[in-house]
Image (tube, rainbow, N blue to C red; front, top):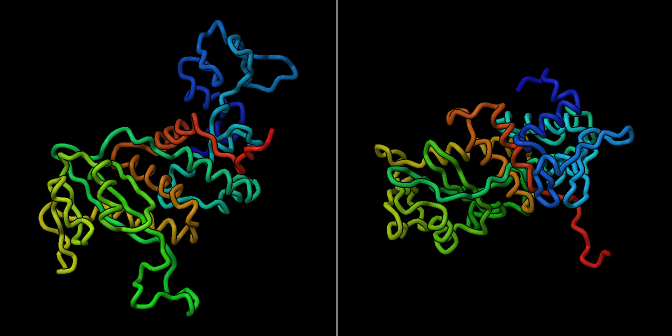
Length: 313
């Protein structure tokens, strides 16, 4: 990103940039879907703020932020674009505290802003991972604090194991491709098998470690195992180093940047790290292109601070 670009300092330039991304062929009414140029008018009155259009079909005014995570925000659009760019270019994350200092906004606004950006980074699943001649790796990891940092009364016993009290993340990584991560209740075969079958192409080569929950995956895939319990980590092209490399980035971001991630928001953080990994430089995606993809992802999504009451009139 080039921080001297006017889109990061001028709200009008930022709006024009946003319009060029969301409306490459001209304005589209978010209320009724009308895109006919002769049926949309750009309002230019002295009392009208820049960027407001009116649809002649549904008679409703709109701007480019309607129907996006930026709708109804009082934060200037140039700061929104700066936040998107910072998220897209920061491999290990960008904290809300750092964002509030960088943009000069309150921490509360920055916190909500970061979660709205993570909502925009959610990638729509369009098909299974892998395919003929492709390899997909599957593994799980546990997110949580170190036992030595817990109060003595809350530390896990040897009987409970080191994963007790932590959140479980299961990831599928296509080599030289994208990643899909899930916050799961447990790593049992009953939980993971349906997920793998629905997310991975049956023609793929599936690589896992020797954990029991993967024992019967040979029924559905060409399945290769690396025996970690026997200190085997690589056998030719058979390994799980790719997915473990992804976990190293995820944990470095959580442990070194965010420090604490609540159970209720963990899926949003996974979407953030999945997006950056699936659109990384080694796949030919630059920081600028990644930021544009993130901004495009804001379209058609809303995330409000408090859901309206069903009894509200």
